[in-house]
Length: 85
Image (cartoon, rainbow, N blue to C red; front, top):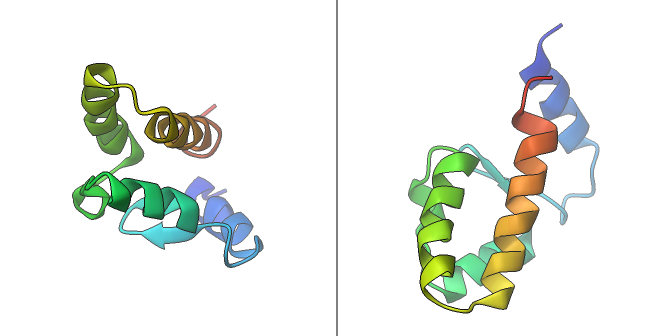
């Protein structure tokens, strides 16, 4: 069974305003707004891991609770939907 196809089908069944595919990432409108607010170039990231690496550098330097929450949400989504079990 094709894992990526199952994820695509599952994501398409979610309400449209919950998740959007942006390149290779799945982000909510809220997550996109927060990333844009902090001028994070998420559109150029090829994977959630790449975005999380970028965010970890920023969050480690400053106290950005909202940005840290978004990073945690992305990490959780990545773990449950992109990690092969």
